[in-house]
Amino acid sequence: MKKSVHPSRIEGTLVAPPSKSQMLRITAAALLAEGQRTRILNPSLCDDGVAGLLVAEGLGASVSISPDEVVIVGGLRPRTGLLDCAESGLCLRMFAAVAALRPEEIEITGRPSLLRRPAAMIEGPLRALGAVCRTREGFPPIFVRGPLRGGAAVVDGTVSSQFLSGLLLALPVAARDSRIEVGNLASKPYIEMTLRLLGERGIRIEHQDYTIFRIPSGQSYAGGDCRLEGDWSAAAALFVLGAVAGKIRVRGLDPDSAQADRRILEALESAGARVLRNFDGATVEKDDLKAFAFDATDAPDLIPSLAALACHARGTSVLRGAGRLRHKESDRAAALAQELGKLGGRVVVEDDALEITGGPMNGGIVESHGDHRIVMALAAAAAAARGAVTIDGAENTAKSYPRFFEDLAAAGGRIDA
Image (tube, rainbow, N blue to C red; front, side, top):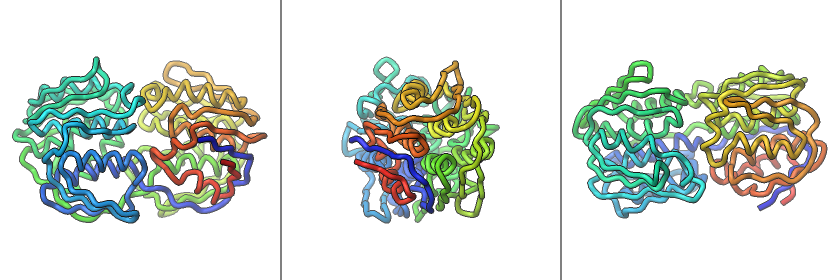
């Protein structure tokens, strides 16, 4: 699907979509809450969120979905030996650990883009903890057979923290206490998100500065109601739209969230945008934008939106943490350089950094690379360009933010299908 975004004056108030990261975590916890009922209010029914629900159902949960709530009754008794995670890397890596609790062999797979994402970090730890695990030369599909008994394991957190979240979810119900040592942990805030959720569900885990985790065995998950936070990752693109093309308020966000991407407001202030924080979000308004530096190692999903911001800022901005972009839905570093370059953006990839020199942005035709965050970044850049930008593959926003273009139009964006 193609959509053309025209130069626009952005002004309005939007509600952030619910967090898909929280959605997937609470879905896994609800699955493990044996016989307990979990009700998720304000659910994320994006493509990734629905993939997680279908996987939980395949593993034995009872799932009821309506627009305003999802009800899950837990129980880990697989109905199928094949789990399809669609394009969700978190779903694949997290549920690999959960599925390994069962003695049946289970294959965990997904769509072609997911099959290119690294999974080698999963094999060794699952074997050390008692399960059988194999991949296709370090890539999905992943085959697991338990039971995951617990014990001691070392986890490499260089590429992603997602598998560690899976272990933290699965090991509390294992037969033995566990000790997990983690090296080079990326995205610590996402592990904090997992730990907060576990605490709310009655699970106890101790850690030493996110390097040693001690997990008592034989614990039980509680059910109950929960309401998802707004998604700071999705809101980042909206805030950048306000910073480059007008003024926008985004509601439904927790300023004290564990989500790493709440740091978007720091980056916007560094770039010279006007930022007004409040109890449920923030208002961001365009001003004289200047070059800025930002280390996104713990928040790599911010880089696409920040790249669009940098293209409209005077001088050369430096975004660090770009090495973690190479194993997402696309090679985001290369995709940003290529597609923003088509519009006149000057983006240079230097090892772990993007160097972006701002200047006038032109209209043109660009590609999504099958990546939801690339689409939203290109739309943000387009709103302040000198001509219309046609985005091929605009439908990919359904992965995390199905209403993105509707919300953009509601805030004054001029869009042609």
